[in-house]
Image (tube, protein in one colour):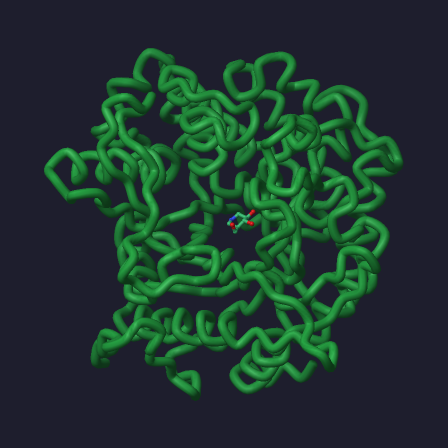
Length: 463
Ligand code: IFM
């Protein structure tokens, strides 16, 4: 298998027109992903309690356009239509998350039957459509009541999370087999406690180190709870893994900044969870929070590695920043999506190969996609060729990783629907399906047809 040629001109990416079927395992899982706060809406319906994003969105200046997830895609009421869309795309698997505040309005204690009923209905509808549900327990929406008790800075958060995991596994674990504990723990930890870009909007290294350790303990406790309560669970954690590169003048200090960003982003969670140790660059700072037996509690056997990948990330030295480095934009002279994220399929291929070697687990790509600003054309269609091109070259990279021996077992596009994109509100769209928010009309984009065609062609799944 030859390497792809590097593009001679920006946006001149090579994409294989025909997928290389012989490289793709027969049971390869094609899917799409979503998350609760980004699509469900119904924030004050049927007993859902407040979550940290509800409060954060109300703070002036936090979210572009003053947006919030109160209505989002109204998926809570329109889930049947959305499951029908999954069927049309022809995916074999659907990854969603449970909103902790919907099922435990105070974070712990009394469960909200109406909230649990919603996930019963959703899981049943997904199964009826012949699609496997993949359930993620935590996609960033901590109940506000728990934040008021210190959130992830409270060591009890590990026990709160394990109890929540047991509740969900007990209720849905007869039908759901695939469970993820967390989505992108490094992102919500670093953005929430290192850069103050997500709730609870803290920029304090000591808080960050404590939160990292408690989230890792929560992961370990949840793995045990899932194994105890679900019928035949297959468990993983979903990590954002992106190569961290030096920006700025690329001095030795910038290189050190990139190495530190990489330790926080790429290693602070996978290394303790899968190898029982913190990365050397962080170990000393986290050590004060580690008690006897903690590393064994964190390092629990899991069944697969969930990988979210989009783009390289950049850091430059900044002695005045709380962490000693600053986040940086991608250089001007590289191809980027409309959101400004570098398009680099080689980074994807290398990451897939590296992660498998490092942790010895089968890899499922649980998120990959392109953020764009788009609208229907005069005939009402959304012809998102930028997204199609992005997905095609990234899949080419995945085929190269398979050819190099990487044990990649599945690929999930982020996302089924346009949705609430955190700090950028509804400006950036990641969906295969366009959502016209004022009317809640769903319009499958060209990329949805393209993905359906690809899945049908490869797997013989006829939508
Ligand atoms: O929308 C997010 C998702 O919630 C987590 N991973 C990255 C996506 C795109 O920014």
